[in-house]
Length: 125
Image (cartoon, rainbow, N blue to C red; front, side, top):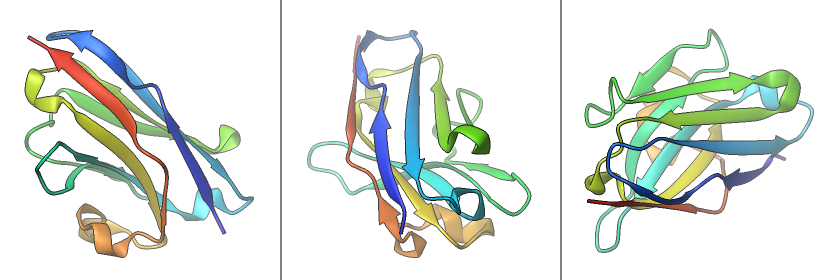
C-alpha cells in the first residue's frame, strides 16, 4: 500500500516557476514509478510527466517538454515536478500517482495503482 500526498501548488503569473512535491508512505516506494497528471475544469485528465522506478527514465507530454522536469529522491520518498516558464494553459489540478509499471505505459492513467489528492496550479496571464 502506498499513500501519496501532493503539494506545492499555488497562484503564479505567466513565466513564473513552481515546484510540486509528491510525498509517499511505504517502504517500497523505490519500486514504484511515479507520474503527474493534470485536469482542468471541463477537460479530461491528461498526462504530464513520469519517472520510471527501474532506471529513472523520464517521460513528458509534448506540451510541457523543455519546461517541466520530474525527479525523485527515494531517500525522502518524494517525487518532484519542477515547472518553469508556466503558461495560463498549465492551469489545472495536478495529481501524482504511483505505478508498478514502467516505460511508455506510464503515460496512461489506467496503469496507476495509487493516486494522491490534487494540488491546484493557477497561472494568470
